[in-house]
Amino acid sequence: MTINDTIAAIATPPGEGGLAVIRVSGPAALAVADRCFKPAGAKASPPSASPTHTMHYGHVVRDGRVVDEVLLAVMRAPRTFTVEDVVEVSCHGGVLAARRVLDALLAAGARLAEPGEFTRRAFLNGRLDLAQAEAVADLIHARTDLALAAAREQLEGHLSRRIETLRDDLMSMLAHIEAHIDFPDEDIAPDTVEQLLERLERAGRFMEALIRTAEEGRVLRKGIRAAIVGRPNAGKSSLLNALLGEDRAIVTAQPGTTRDTIEETASIRGVPVVFVDTAGLREAQDEVEAEGIRRSRQALERAEVILHVLDGSEVMGGQRPDADPVPAKPRLWVINKSDLPRRLEGGDFEAASVAVSCLTGAGMETLKDRIRDMAGLGAVDHVEVAISARHLDALNRGYKALGNLMTCLRGDQTLELAALELRTAVGAVGEVVGKTTTEDLLDAIFSQFCLGK
Image (spheres, rainbow, N blue to C red):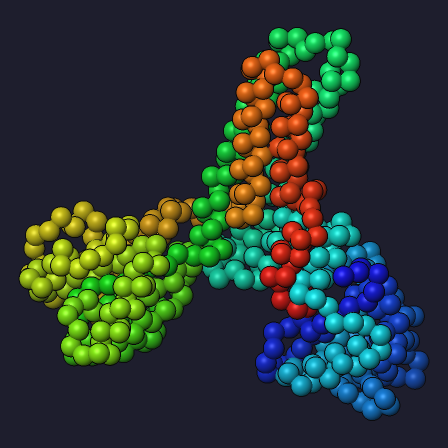
C-alpha cells in the first residue's frame, strides 16, 4: 500500500437506493475527475479549476459515452477527511450504476481502495489518531443510541486526551530517570524516589480506571447473548416477540412449535442484546425435535445470560427447573402469563424473578431494566470512555510494566532496568492512540473496515 497514489471506492452500501456516492482521494483526484467528468453549461469549470468545497452538476463519461448524470463535490487538501484532495461523485443508486461510475474513475487513473484505506490515510496524515480511527468503525457498526454516543465521544477525542495526558506524564518521568542514568555520579535522592513512586501510583490508578471501562465497551460494541429457555408452551416465543416488538417466532397453543433456535437482536435500554429462542426442554418426541433440543443446548453454552421462562398459571410439576441441566450462568426467572390466576408456588427463584404477561405487556418494562442490569451497565445513560479489547491488551501490558518499575525503585535496582520498564509502559500506552504501531497492527485494524471508509 502507498499513500502517494489516488484511490477510489463506492462509499455507500451495495443494493438499490436513490443515490450512491463514490469517493476519490489522493494527489491526482482532481485530474482523475477532469478526465471523466463533463460539467454542464458552456462556462462551467473543470474540477481542477473549481474552488474548494463546491458542488457541480454534469455527467460522468467514458470513451465518449455518458455513464450517468451526477453531482460532483470538489474538496481540496487539507480541509478533507483524508487531508488530501478529495472528489465525491453522487450518482443514481443501484449496484450497476455505481459500479459503472467507479469503473470510469478507475479507467481515468485511480486505483480501487483497500478496506479502510480512506480512514487509514486520515490516520497516517495526522487528522485522526488510532483510537479515533477505530471509533469511525464503531460509529458505523453501532446498533444502539448508547453505543452510537460512546463511539462519537471516542471520535471526538475523549479517550485520546486521557491517553495523551497519561503518556506525557510517563514520558516526563522517563526523562527524569534517564537524566540520572546520563549523570551516574548524581544518585536519585530518597525524597525524589518517593515523589516518583507517588506519580507512578497515580498513573496506575488512572490506568485502572480506564481498564475498568473495558467491559462496558465490550457490551456496547458486541452486546450480550441471552438464551430464552423453559419447558414447551411456557411462552418463550411469545416473550421473544414481545421483546422485539414484532411477530418473529411462530406462537401456537400446541407444545413444541419451536424446533430450531431463532436469533434476533434488539436494543434493550441502549444495550444490543442477541435473544436466542430455543426449543422447549423436554424428552424429544421425534428426531427433528431432538435436533432442535441439541441446538438449544449449544445456544445455552454460548449465551452469557439466561432468561428461564416459567408458566405462572401452572403448578411447578414438570416445570421444575431442577429437571433441566441449565449451565451455571446469570439467570433471570421470567414468570409468564401474569394475566391469569397465579398457580405457580414454591422454588428458590422468587428473588430473581420478574412476572410478565406477553399477552398484555405487563411487566415488560421491568424485565428490560433487569436485562440491562444483567449486562453490567446498570442505570448508565452516558458512556464517555469505553475501551476496546485492543486498548485493554495495551493498557494491561503498560500497567504490568508500571508494577515492575515500582518494584525496581523500591528494591534499589539499577536505573537502567527501571528505565526499560518505563519505556515498555510508554510504548504500550502509545499503542492505544497509534504513537507506536506496526504495519501488521494497522493492517489488522483497517482490514475490518468496509470499502469506501
